[in-house]
Image (tube, rainbow, N blue to C red; front, side, top):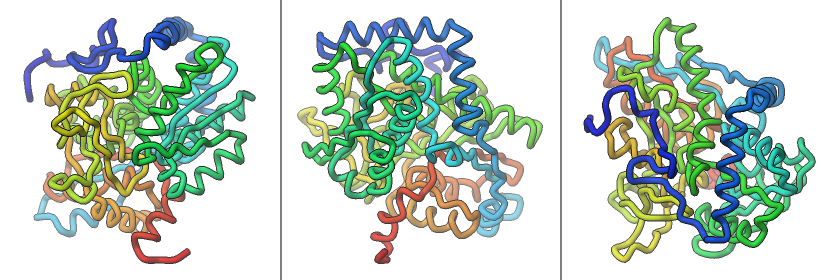
Length: 413
């Protein structure tokens, strides 16, 4: 591990300027800066107010259904051990955030942000979405609190995520299909930021991942950390100790930061973030920013990005609409450079195989995002001692992906 920090200080970021080492910060239009500072100040006040935390946690319990279960994936574990040497084959657990209301982890941070927006007196909400889970979560919370909601979604993603588009519209949201660029998540976020600049007075931008200008990476991480906080308690109850390995998929990286953050200062816990390898990181068709990218500025923060020799942002590719973002949250970039978290990748084919295997062995149809994480679990678990405990974040359910998967498998629905 790169010893840039003393042990047990990895939870120290960001600094007052919103920087995680050389990453993060606030690179926004001048007209947005006052609102960004307003969001930061409002969040600081909310964090110091016990009534805010109590209301958020009440919603998590009674509306979302938290805590999400920790599942001992016995048949996946047996599958891994069947191909392992004697004494090898780690025990695999799933942190089942796909059982949350709306079907993913996104609702955790959305409810926190909508409560904050109401405190700030904002009258309408905008959001970006890729796979549609953040859009659905935002539309859900806006329906609950009677707030108008506009969701920006790349036209490519609108086509491949029709179930979630319909869900958002049923919930009362306006869905705007963005046709610029590759018409995916990056382009949706570009359009949402442009819209926000023009509507700063009454609008709150609910960002779905640990990216964007400060305080968003910190704020979304804080709300998503409920995942790791619960996991600590549940593993102590199940095994009497902390897990040895944590695994999560990485797009922007909110589900991974939510799982990892409460464990960052536990040196015994190894962490693996799994990026989208697409058709292979040795091809242009992938979305592995930490593996194949370099530092640059996008969407208000400095982080690792897929870019050409001239600094132009490249289009990411993944079978998963939630992972084809050409960047990653700045805290992940920082943890990558420090060596605290290991970042690997899984290809489209590996994720598709894991998707099918999990469905058949565990009776759990995963979203394509955590299918990437499971693909790596299937590689690494057979190599580890049998007493090793792995927790993988099952961050979304796969009903949104059945049309995509069916198409790749040549099945006509």
